Length: 124
Image (cartoon, rainbow, N blue to C red; front, side):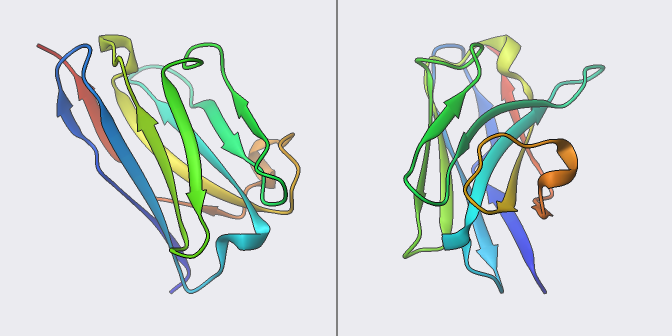
């Protein structure tokens, strides 16, 4: 079954860190741009970072710039989201997505695969 599987979510105190993983199954991430999204209760889904399939160029939303880092390890067929200096406002379900090609400019329909989501809760 072709799928993306996120892991690494959980409960963390404000100021703490988490690393989320996004593993691809039955397809190769090499040719796909990877995006990370999040959706907080009562809010629309927000695209926060993505990394190109070609040259590793990235996009960061202002809300996470300087705190979150996206990376990919094609040998492991996995992408990562390193989250530092977490705030309560970062509480959300986090999703990864894969879209074929190298473009960072994408609409919602331009993503081919989505993960099931992993909950991140930032609370003391």
